[in-house]
Image (cartoon, rainbow, N blue to C red; front, side, top):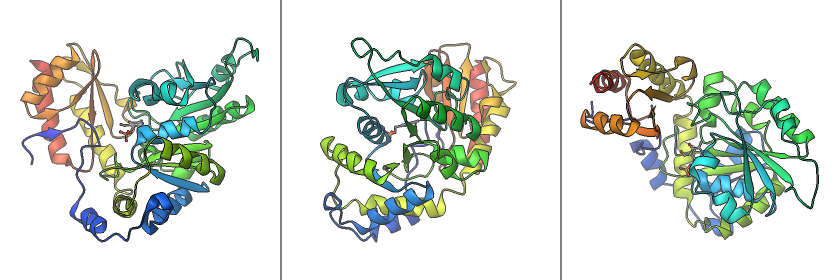
Length: 344
Ligand SMILES: Cc1ncc(COP(=O)(O)O)c(C=O)c1O
């Protein structure tokens, strides 16, 4: 067992030996010229897995979301996002600075997906002299700041249908789409069917060192490709990363329920601990939010001294995430250490 148990994020995983071997032996070419065969294979496989026409490998989820927003909008338009969405909180207002759009946020029910009525209430009057045109709805599944929660497919579909009726496109931030699908026991394509474009991360629960795919229509891919180049995201012999992605699809996708069991154990073990509150109903995937009575930064510092790494998520919220590189045994130990931290 490691002395330090790292529960900061599922992005802290290191590529396994098998993944490194796949990377080392990848067949590569210049992907800016569209000549990397491993990238092509990964893009085709992810597009098929998600039931879409095309995919585009990007360096990060932040860039892929920005590409998704920029290629679905025109500067001066408006994008609807949940008030707790990653795009709103953690992407440095890139959509405003670079895509030139305004984010308008709504406070969705618990898993971050608006109801059709809520969307309808956001409908603009269509006055072109005063109002921006609303062009896009962004969804997120699983929902990071809402504790890794997952919206039932039927609700997601109603929101997407309502958005489409209002003339909006739908983009889904699927950084943890694989976790969402695993938690519901449905194919990922059921989620992606609700969106016109989406992102799919390789570097969260799937354990790759980098890479997120933008996924959507063949026509959308052409616009996304232009945006990727404009943002400096064109990479050359990137089959090395694509090989890690293919390896992850073969080896790390089906094991995600294990991470969810670890998160559930952590939440249940801390349920009766003093100095914190954890809503186990929200623990549907690999994220556990701990509502603290003390300042979250102080708790995170104390936990670090006890050998557990976590992150402050809000003034009184600490986030823990389970992943490939933390065992159930380590999660059991982390829960013990965290109990002491909170009780202090
Ligand atoms: C929901 C969500 N979307 C997007 C991102 C951005 O991904 P990246 O760190 O690859 O830029 C993250 C990162 O944690 C995330 O949690």
